[in-house]
Every structure is written in C-alpha cells, then in structure tokens.
Image (cartoon, rainbow, N blue to C red; front, side, top):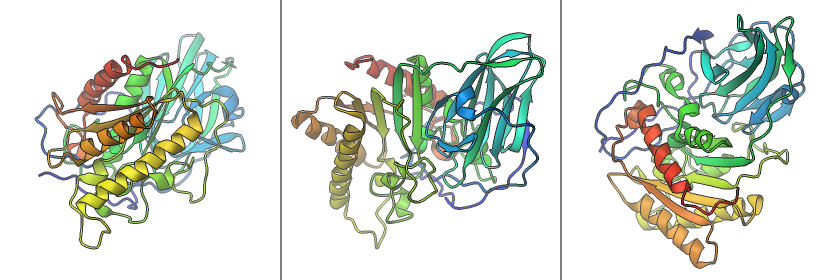
Length: 396
C-alpha cells in the first residue's frame, strides 16, 4: 500500500515574504486513487525577519467579523488553527490589512473575489488599492496549517479619504469541523502527489477550499476548522509523538502553547459538529513498543471517542447535531467499523443527535500532496456532505 510520507512535525521551513497572484497555484491533477491515505503531520513555521508595520488599525475585533479560535493580544488577535477568517466592510478606494505572521499564507478577497495570496507576509500592512470608490467587503482567510506558530491580525484600515464601516453580522448558522489533514485541506492545491520541496505543502494547502469551508459557505454558515494533521483520537500517524493525540490540543486557541485554553466569547454555539478522526489511528501498522494490539487499539479508540463526544455535548448542549464521519481506507475497515459502532452505541443510549456519515473513494483522484484529497476531491466531498446534512433534522 502507499503511505503518506512523514514530514517532520517540528521541522522549520524557510520563511519568505512574497505576494502571489491568484493564478499562481496549479490546479489539482486528475489521476486514479491508490491505497489508504494516512494524514501526515504538518510542517511548522518559525518567525522570520520582521518589517516595520504601517500605522495600526483600530482594535481588530471592532473592525472585523471573526470566525475561528482567536485570542486577544492588545489591539490585535492571535491564532493558529487553519481556516480562521476575518470579514470587514469599508468605503473608499482601498483597504489595509494589518498582519504579523512570518509562518502562514493568506488569501485576500474583495467583494467575494480573491485578489492576492500573501505568503508568510511578516509584520506589515498589506494594501489593496485603486478600487472603485464606494462600499466594499474585505475578507482575510488563513490558508495554511501552523501548529507551532502564531499569527496576529491587527484589523482593517481604510485608505485616505475612506472609512471602515460596521463589521458584518455573525451568521445564525454555525458549523464546527474537527479533524486531521483531510479536514485541513492538506496539499489540496498541489498539481502533484510528490511534494518534497521545503514549504511546498504549506504553499499548496488551502483550508478555504477544503470540504468543510465549501460546505459551510454553501449553507450560509460561519465555521471553525479545528484540524491538526497527523493526529488521531488515541494514536497519531505511524505512532509519532506518543502520549499526545488530537485531544491534547483541542481545547487550545494557540495549538503549540501548553495549558492554553480557548475562551468562547459567548458567540460560538454550533448547531452542527462534523468530526473526521481515525485515519491516523488505523492507517499504519502498530509498531513494536506501542501499547496496543489491533483489538485493544479499537477499544481504546472507541472509549476515547465516546469521552470526546461527551465533552462536546457538555460544551454545546443536547440539541447540537454531531456527525461522526469515516472514509475509505484500502488496507482496513477498522476506522469505518469503529466509527459506525460508536454512533450505534450513542443512539442505543438515547442520543439520537449523533449520526454516522461515510464517504467512499468514488470519483476522487487523491491528487493532493502525499495522496491527500485534491481541490477537485474536496468539491465532491463537500457536495456529498451537503446532501447528507440536508437529511438531518437540524434546528437552525
């Protein structure tokens, strides 16, 4: 079977400051799927040389509708989960975006169209200029994963003669996506499955076109993508970093800060939670020295998954719909079987708002880095998820 190449989770990548045109990323290649698709750990960034910032914006939360886990830092907000986004409105011919981030990539969108991709921009204010004079919308979205690095957004500033308008309202519908590299959109914009170059995975990962983001936007929902590549419920990919798993990091706003806890501002009450965890638990053979047999790994997975659902129930209430998802793996059915059994157990206990969703490999090309779903695949998965969500008795 083919296995995802293990990219060192703590490896530093070469940091550059580049602005790419929106056409710079190649489309995903079309080719047949192969083998199980373990979700490899993400690379990490390290701070690069900062450049002086242009004048500070107003306090970031005051100028932008924010979706995703953030932590206040003076006039700015800090974050590390993929797919965090900020939406604002302004009047005039331009807008500045205040950033301090030497590790991540961002898309800048004006009135719904992507106008620039910022690659590890550092400490700066990026300006969009020469727009038609009038009211516009601006959106900044974090494309990449950066478990061990922190980005900082300082808000939007209007060009001379313009003004920042009241920020967009929160969407009534909210969805939380929990998962690994499939959920993060790992390497989904790559034109090749082989991505050995430094930074290549980061440059070709785009959470904004992951199946979760596509599904949420199609439903008119705000969303969080709380995804961490290479992590499982009890076992990480190929047994890496024993003693930790996805649950180690879930409660954090800043993934790489031990003891950090995200403080819900009181506005995040998702009616739908979609979980995709288990590829990394089961995609590779158990190594000598790991504390499991195949049977005890399944038992530990199910036990921990039940505990995780209990946590979500406590946090979001009995009315939230929780979707336990699984997908095709060519070398084992343990993931799908265990996930299905978890849902059956919850339903037998009287919790009928936990549902099972399985998506197979039909029409998927797995053309992303390391045999991950391509952008083409994410569109297909999103359509399938949207069709499934339409069958759920959601209260939104």
